[in-house]
Image (cartoon, rainbow, N blue to C red; front, side, top):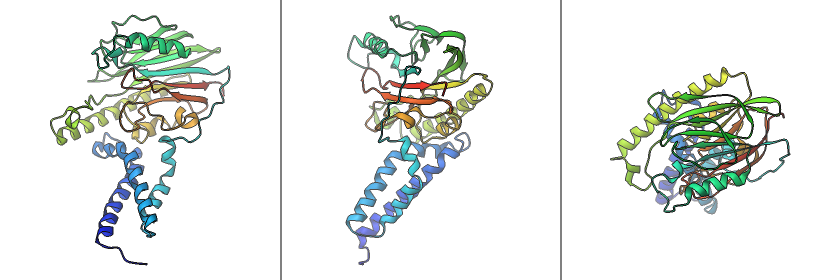
Length: 335
């Protein structure tokens, strides 16, 4: 077998670097961002690093070079990560006993006219009503909006822009708000009587990055400013996750988490919450499950029922009425 030429040696150097970086992304979910916020940023690169490593495997395979084993082995080590990125098998085992939960970041119902349409508010309202869900968790719900939903508001955090709202057809036993320090984001919850059993629904909106995807460096002055922005947000999100976990521990009811987590399934945040809760997309979704309208398939909105519940169906809807896509899960809480 021929030795590598200069170009191939250079390719293998790049290959080795991206393979090591991919390996690091497997470790990131176990590292608290409060202590190492810079490392947490690497979790956002997992899909890109995976694709690049797959391309290197193909290149070396075409050339019949053993160097393909580097990326192939690294991909194999973290193969379980891919289930949170892409699902080949979309399952539907729903039953009449399931509850239907819809989560949607509505981007303030287009309050600042990001979408050039005068009907966005009503279109979103019509979409939500058409889904006939039992529970709807809405993020970025402005308090000055008046729409005719089929369901009643059972919990709400009122803000002009980043409000939160839970709608439900079930009787509410209790509700409340979890405020975050130095943040306009937050969490609300509602204890609902469902099939003679009380279940707590958390509507979550973790710290936002506040980035403008249409500007250089996402609206920041330079790369350094953007990097520091990411570090700060990851630290805040870690604090918010810990606050949420303490609140869940004190809850005597089964819980379902839903909302805009502003982070991916390859983060420390996700790893913490999925120790006690399951990802509805992983259990019953299909494709990439993208929930954010961006050129890459970002999935930052989640529905996470407790581990003893069963997810029978998961859908994401590619409707462009917000910068997020709505997601829907059918959940059997008695399973």
